[in-house]
Length: 124
Image (cartoon, rainbow, N blue to C red):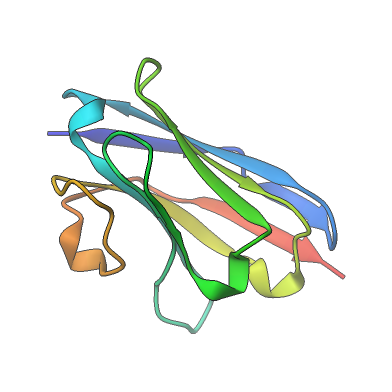
């Protein structure tokens, strides 16, 4: 079992930055590829970013490339998402998720463990 707790969400103006954190507990964090997903009201959940077990291989959805950075500190068992140049369309509940795979996948079904989510709201 893996327990995940997100933090760092909030209200920010367009162009601003936020850093989301996801603290993991329950098993060896380094065994998990990790992902960030988001879900806006009335929309389906979408993949945002993923990182491999070792933190070397990353993947981003096109809409956040160059603005968001995912990172993984295995010693602290914490996943991060640095979000810069935020846009109103980034407004959503953001979830971190853990997978037993080596490399992060874009499909939510690949992830067995999920956090409770943290709200990010970007105003104009």
